[in-house]
Length: 141
Image (cartoon, rainbow, N blue to C red; front, side, top):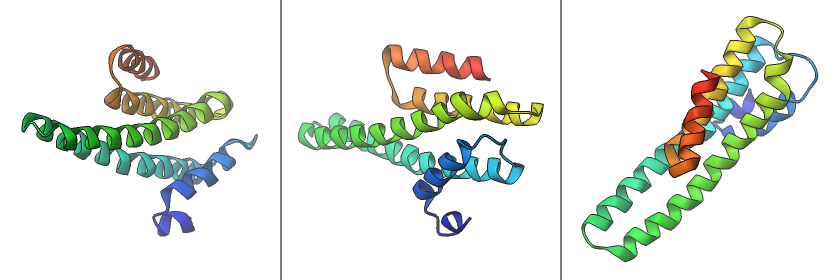
């Protein structure tokens, strides 16, 4: 909770990752903290990705290839961070949380989270990876 108050979502996500690997089912409060941690960790990077992509396109359309390439390189860094965060929560959901969900409410909550993170991956990937992520999202919804 302290990490949430301090808006330190990466640390919050790490702590909730540990909580999520415990054998007991998460309480409603723990489930919500997990969701807040990952949603905010990913949310700021999704916003950054959209801004960087826009700058890259604008620079390319103006013929500023050097600046466009800097933006592309930076976009790649943000994409790597996004991929890691999404991979972490998807693994936790698949290996621990969905299978141990005792109530239908918990299971629906986790499946929606799973679909959301696959959707986020589909936003920044291309080609076959995008299609596979979109299909995974559809299947989880």
